[in-house]
Length: 159
Ligand SMILES: [Cu+2]
Image: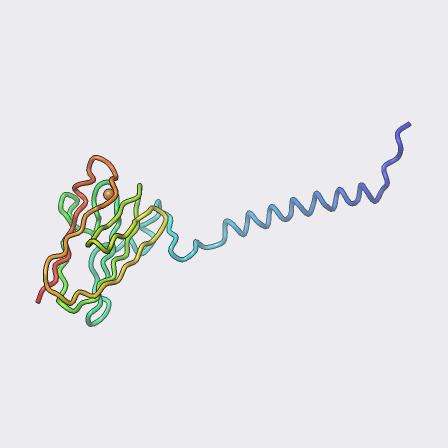
């Protein structure tokens, strides 16, 4: 004859089982409802984010934001797809580049010291003040496929 299981053991098993179930359910709800962390973005829903409005925007007397979506194979700042980015700002401007990727990892290389890695799911920001007039070309510096060399642009700083 099998020994009887102590009732407290049955009760404990039920309580533990229920606790695990409830915890899992609460964790799922928390996970679904938690907003994305700052700097994290859903690459499939860029049109419901700030990246809906791409291009150059003046945000203060000498402040500009250049919002770019990198994708195969263009830095999309709202220009025609077959054209490189070209933005013009006056000397003394502070330009913040805000960028994300829709697909693979790209990199925006402005000069030898400045390379912004642009990854799907993340927002990259870089602020720089341009105190010398001139042309500041940038290129994609991470090989991203056959159209990689087309990923170029220029920041023109006028006197
Ligand atoms: Cu690229």
